Image (cartoon, rainbow, N blue to C red; front, side, top):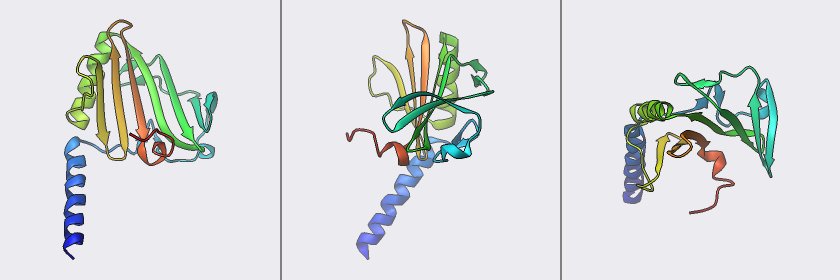
Length: 155
């Protein structure tokens, strides 16, 4: 019984930590994470990396938080939506995205202090923001963890 109580307490702590991080993400641009590719309209294949397939969506809104997107890709592993990646350009786009993610998902983990890369947790979705001072490009990735754990290397 004590083990169950300890386990329940640990789960509560984990859940409260996740809630304290900020909002939970369950979709990207209206596509529910985990959704089957066949249920999503206007998708066109762009690249294949084994069982991971990347697509673009026709007539998609090519902005995020008012910033124009250079690239926008949707990733499907075994035909399940698990990855959204996009990039923007310019210091103001980076500043806008950084402020948005900090406000909505709480303080980021920054694995390497000398690199502008920030990791956020939003429920079962991990979000990464990276900015390259040389190219002035900000890149964002949303990863749906229940699916991406199946193919990501173990750490």
